[in-house]
Image 1 (tube, rainbow, N blue to C red):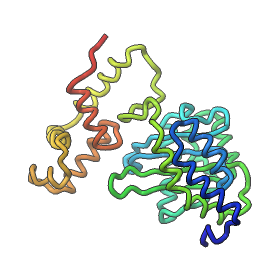
Image 2 (image 1 turned 90 degrees about the vertical axis):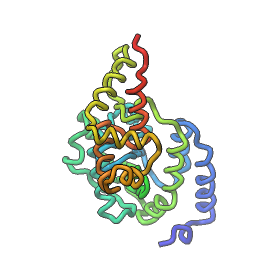
Image 3 (image 1 turned 60 degrees about the vertical axis):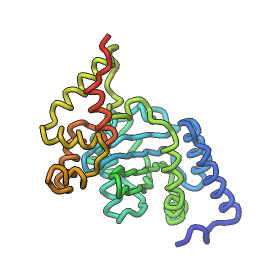
Length: 275
């Protein structure tokens, strides 16, 4: 089915307008308005969940954009949403990376969510539209889940609209800054103790100190910008072995990518002064 062949002149005009306005998104407020005014007319939804990171390691961050009370990014921790979005990510892979509609959420998919009202809201959502972008280079995959409590009048057309607009939705999310706690794998749900610098340095130091001598050696070369293949040649091991070490390093440091791992190493080497 070709989306453009099934749109009226008015709908085509709105589609082009939606694409153009996506370039103007520069804040969370602008993102909310664009999703719930422009995108809403093509893809009905009440909630948009964006999940990104390394799903194979369970290192995933989330943004939640919604008009519903209690459904915001700050309403959930990444650890709470991760089992739910990972379940949908696996289903998306099972659909061969094509957009699909999920019309029921099992109890097992929702068991990590906190609070009866939250679970009930998810259960009330009749439709979940799911699509993502598989990052073959950096393994920084992105999944987008659009939830609605209404029946879709034309499911095939809505899926095609999602397929067509996903690059623009993805770009819009990438154009806004992270919220506090979405850097270096720091969870949002840790309450402030009044000694943030001390707490952060301590947790970073403990994580770095878990690295083995070989992992520290690899990170020393990563800090110099070496690729897995180059590090393998230097250390006389295969690039595949270096890749496996890197996956363990990212998991131990609780970060999403090499840049964040280097930043954590730097914070360990140059900790913030304690007050």
